[in-house]
Image (cartoon, rainbow, N blue to C red; front, side, top):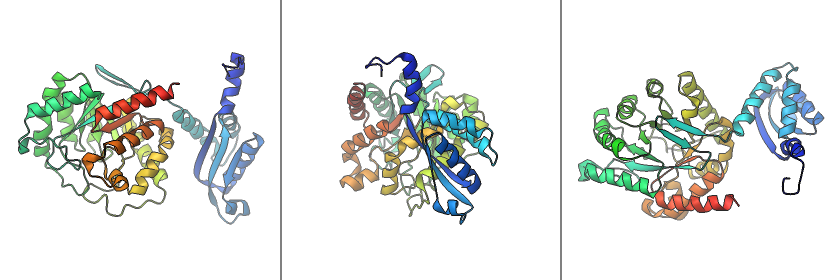
Length: 384
């Protein structure tokens, strides 16, 4: 519009009409759904309902609203005077669309400031384990010195990592649970040294509140929790240290998560889980700007599930939080490419670029340099 010389006031009026949304509402009463349809039609928009809701055969229906930004804003005003729960729905719609359009993501962690609005952030993986699925474990008991682990983390930072993620317990399918004492002995000495030597935030990959507490006390500033805050003490620890948290969806536990995972409606279930976990974190006093959500690629998901998540990742924007995606070297790539974990670098890069295009703000990867270069090219193209 600017290029063709449209008046600035005209741009302001017309731009909302150029942005179309599809909004799915679950389980509305027939009365509310039919009122909603009439209101949408009156605005030149549309609402798709189940036929059985129109004939009276069913008492409830899902509903797909189809309209532009301007029409939804007018709808919110019209619903304010309607009964049957539509007034509350107006508020929910307003919040949902505001969250979906949110782009200014900044995470402040003491001296660190991660600006996800400027570019996606890369989280480099440091596994201090003997049984990492990808074969990259740096395990002191296997003859790897602490200095070598620190040097490896430093190299990831030089390669372009914005965050270093330290993990002491493998979360590969079928992995055994590690005793607390052993996990602490693996990660805390490394975090103590790294916190003094690198100039990027350190994340602790753990679902145990005591490991998180000790890590935060020794210089970490992010907790990457694959269990989605199942440890009742975890939220309190994160709040106390004003840390950030990555809340991930996992179906089951690593020991059983890949035993025939089934979903009735994959994306709906993930959105509901992550939305509830976000609200739990907020209720516990964790700052909203410090909450990151992860749909959990490979954690209780089949190949088909993982591909659907990546394809529909943009829908997670409705939660209004930055999204972290971890596809790096995972088995779903191996099933597509028929390659071992260490050979999946090109598959990883492709999935990472697609994830960013569809809304990911943070990528958790092993091959930092390759992903960094791919994103640089992608960004140059996008900015044209």
